[in-house]
Length: 379
Image: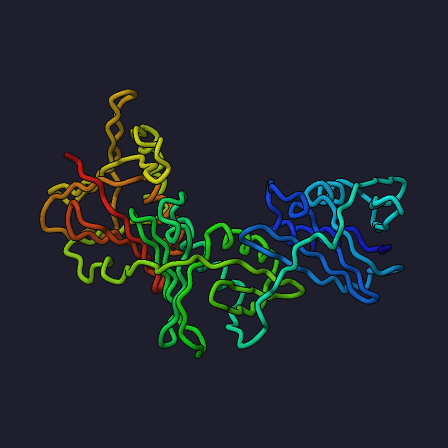
């Protein structure tokens, strides 16, 4: 293999390929990037247990002097390409299993691995795609993925559920203590129900960061493939039945409080500086507990009590209050802040049914986005 390519073009594609590289693996070959050059195109592949990524480079700056294949140490190779300043990069193999990288006056030699030992990646057949714009995918993920479970106690909850029925795409995430759900109307497509690992979705959003266009999604029973530009991004799907969350969201709310979102976020951030963190040892219960109280005069107070450091309380002026009686509800400030920051609206509403019942957050301009949080007992 002997190729020359613009460094910027190579680095742009390597940044996407890096999404499939494991930090470590008992199989050294998996930590590498597979290069396969034909007479016309350059293919680069990375893979771990969850994600496989392949890019096809057909840039006009690519000059393939000699076809061939190899596997290079992934992250080390990316670091080298990222640090060098040369406009052009020449990559070629020597006889003693060495990849030589030439860039201006610099020369780097890397020990390579045998491409024949690299596992074969079977990508999902490109048939019957669901086509969504990249902005829709990025929005759906960012508005929900933070609510997934961060441990493997319930593996299915470590993913975001995507289901389609009757023209509505319903995207749901929950860790049993909160729920995030977004409903989006899409073009006609067959019904499906699948759960995608949260880490895979995070990496997909990063891969789509500078892309503005359509993404074709292909499904099988256990895999999903996203194809865009010159990229094939494939992830495994989580096995098992996602819990039915349809009955968790109340239909009526006797108590509604509206706030300026930014003012509420700032007040909660200040008060939560003193909130107790006794349960932080359990990553599933990283609660920084605060209280929200509606007084008789319909003013709203946010407070916390910390026996070690002290107390904090702050009055927040709502834009609207509909509540017949005073009420105090306790919850995780972290959960509330993450939920609030998912909204684009400047005004949001907290919709309550009682002190120990789940409450729902909605935004005036965020159609079909629902955030639900379970309160904690304040006894």
